[in-house]
Amino acid sequence: MNNTTNKNTKFQRFLASDFFYHFKRDKLAIISSIIFLILILLAILSPLVAPYNPYDLQILDIMDSELPPVWQQGGDPRFLLGTDDQGRDLWSTILYGMRVSLMIGILAVLLQGVIGITIGLVAGYVGGRTDNLLMRIADVQLSFSTLMVAIIILAIVQSAFGSDAFNQWAMVILILIIGLAEWPQIARTVRSSVLAEKEKEYVDAAKVMGFSPIRIMFKHILPNCLSPIFVISTVQIANAIITEASLSFLGLGMPVTEPSLGSLISIGKQYLFSGSWWITLIPGAFLILLVIVINLLGDFLRDTFNPKLYKD
Image 1 (spheres, rainbow, N blue to C red):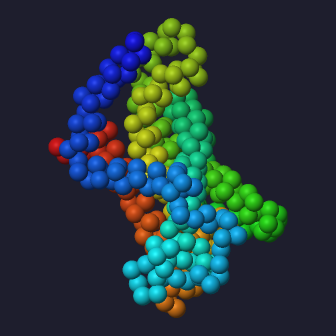
Image 2 (image 1 turned 30 degrees about the vertical axis):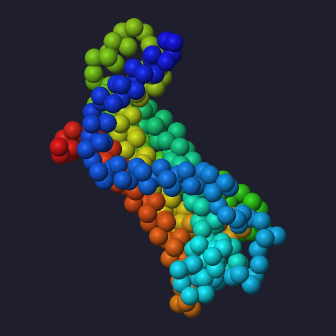
Image 3 (image 1 turned 120 degrees about the vertical axis):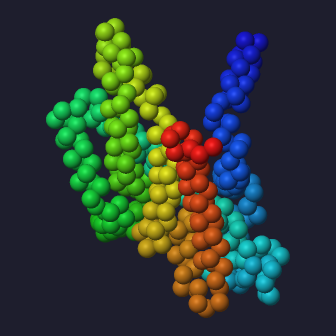
């Protein structure tokens, strides 16, 4: 009974919060949230929603390759958005590919968060030479293009271990590379918040009570830095998805046997001017839609969590 009451109380507080007040007044944020939720559910439930399993080679028929969408002449009712060069149902392949892209983007940002939050907390709280050293490392890493570093590392990995080994571990390698390349963005954001928070009275009170620096950083300061972390993490997910798509388009990302949105676009590029435009353009449209709604939600969070930027 108490648990139910607590849940109702928390839900009522959420409905009365400034966040929900601004959210229900922002039509663009509502539409973006609905679209993003639909895309997430389609990706998660792709084994149930997709008409076909694009990984099942037994159901593929080369005679079904490059069929146009159902609304075009020559379209097959079995394949709503047409088929790719291997005869795979494009709608099913997009759903599975979107799940791969989202998984890479979210897990890469989680890795960025673990590294960036830890370094940002230490740099901002300790200060001095430690702060200078960690921020100079971040500056050096930011001076290099993430895409350029990823291309070099992926090319070396493929050469060293071979294409078969790389394809087997492609998702893990992409998550590690994107995560390790982008942590400075989160670290700098956390550091700037920590510099403001550590001068407040609750931090002085925690020091007087004898709490350890680690407890002060993670239990007291970090919860008050979550708003900017949520905002930049949303943007970083979109950036990670774009980075993965770019690498897959260049042939250094996900293999064609386990397609992401980027690899689907790459597969169809050679057919773009031969009339089979749907193989590239339709996955590209889904990628653009996914990135746009994530960025719009990031803009909404930025404006809501920063009253100085929010226009009522």
